[in-house]
Image (cartoon, rainbow, N blue to C red; front, side, top):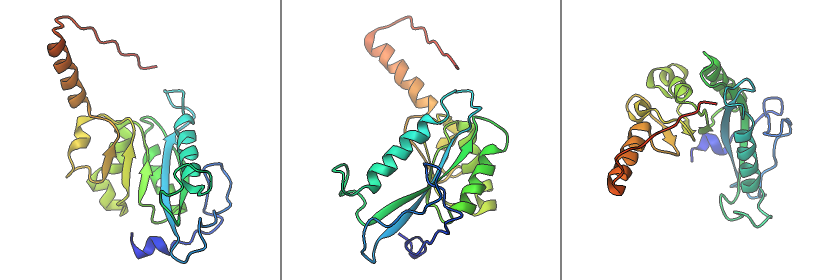
Length: 195
């Protein structure tokens, strides 16, 4: 962990908790070695075509609260003497310029964030994780995406610091084909619904 992160001080006006409040968290320990871990969150905008914009943010909020609560019996030993500090901004599924704008807002409100959860769509991940754009804004944070499956994002030289929680479309289709061969299926129908 860098020295800059361990000395991160957030002015109350720039801190926005996942619950919408602006009260900065207290450190989880009185130890002088306690650290604030800045985490950006890019959730889909309320006008998202997926129609589930806040669900992912609610899951993240719950997980962060559980990790920060060192007295509830859930993951109390994980990240001792650390408090995760989040800032949440809206990103849209393919809304031109919204994800980059949200990224810049995260940088302004949560300086030095080391990771961001989201965005979900591959196009939005490409917008904020590409080498050229990252070089122009100086961002080095890891982008953690739960649903971006574009094979192009596997190019680590073009998209450094991208972590996905599922396989890309090429790997998924190869696995489906291998399953069909293994089970001797000669006819398969795939149904896709984009609602």
